[in-house]
Length: 119
Image 1 (cartoon, rainbow, N blue to C red):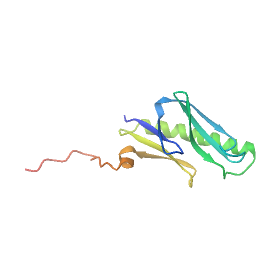
Image 2: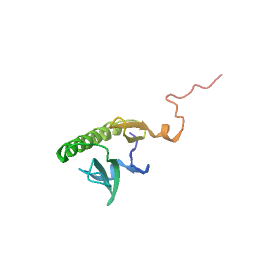
Image 3: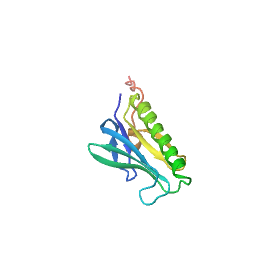
Image 4: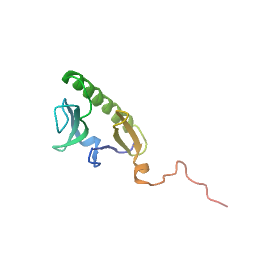
């Protein structure tokens, strides 16, 4: 099994196995609209989602943020069973989490099967 990383809104990476808490807020980081989701790892908070465009009542925003947290946990579980290192990123347009092999992000070609030696 490979490592699992979570991409933050600043495009840095946090190791999923170091995350001790995932929390949400009914308001975005900058205003009392939308919602935000953060992960805490080694005592530091990392913002994963800051969606100030999501409209609705505070309860609706909190409910949506809670569903996004649950989806993140499912993505972490799915990524942890992969053989390769995986990166979990938030897709704003689709309001979902995307799993990508770390080798794809790094631009490294990893063969899926060993190549046979030519004779």
